[in-house]
Image (cartoon, rainbow, N blue to C red; front, side, top):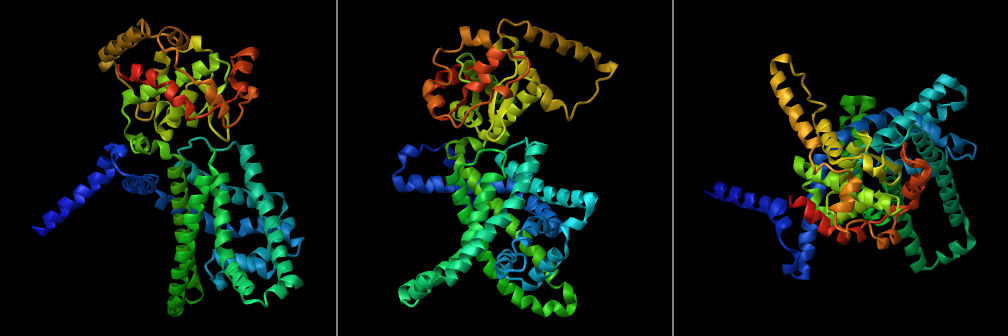
Length: 505
């Protein structure tokens, strides 16, 4: 009986967190309960995203890539530091000890390999292989981060080269400056005089203990903002980085404790005893890093929390209507000379999940109906004049994308069904409702539908006229892609009537 009662209570809790809490009206709660409900929603979305995005599996792939490329990566990253005399400094060793959770034997081996690697004597083939290895680890990290953010399009090859290797070249310079400042502080006569006072001495020692945590937090913050091929808000990335850094340092303490106790296994593993421990530590680190990415994503998309949970369960009809509404928004923005529409603006205006809107717009791009004009932060505009795009173009593009992977050839035996569906498709194409986007905006869509002027004042950036789709005239491109990027929240009220009109059918 008690087991049955436990299952019933557990089922009630699961239903409350996964369904009931999302359907309740927050306005009927007081401030404390609203905050608690918001926290539960956020925690559920983080856990749900962590499982759905297969973060544990991705952490395994990142662990393998990291171990494979750590020496080549450090060799490239710190080759520039050899000219500065930093490769054997205590500061660099301290940095690696923080990353390796105090595993001195592993750090000494890594430094030995790095110091013995002479990049200048590798030759063209060796240098290319070394750079390819370094690029592969950065590309693997980008794919994992993009999967969490729902970004299906990675950086271009040139962007990968410039962005990824700038990290490998600039980081040693930054570390060198940081170490130089640290050394100068220790040798500063005024500082040494102040340290004779107990208050300043306590603050100084506390700062030294806090530096490893800050190094981890700043590194994660940089990764969370820079690596995903989308725009990440500083506030969301900062919270994710701080939580991940706290988990990192907490788990590091447990790891060091276990590592000391595991020394007894040296009799079994010999000199390889540190290898499995190091692999476990790298894996745990990547799990924490990906968890921080999920936290950042959930925080940035707080306004669409309720919708994000339904992103993967959207019906075919819902996707078709969202695609049509998105293309109508692009048409109105294009006709008004306001340029492309940002992904965040589409999500806010249509009150739909970011991932779902991006998935739909990716299909529109593949079908040649829309084009992304800004690589860093997704901004979309029409790829063709709106008078040449009909609703059946949108619906058929979505239907073709859904079935292309599982498409089976129809034999002559089933020719009768082929003829029937061709007739149905022809009927849809010839239907009076199959208007072009321009016709629909001019005759059916409410006049208040579109991206308003106030939305333009909150734009995230500017479009690029050179990025306009082929097939548009120079004047159309200037009026379309170059006008700018549309902001998010202001579009929501402007299209409320349109959403109700289209989705009610």
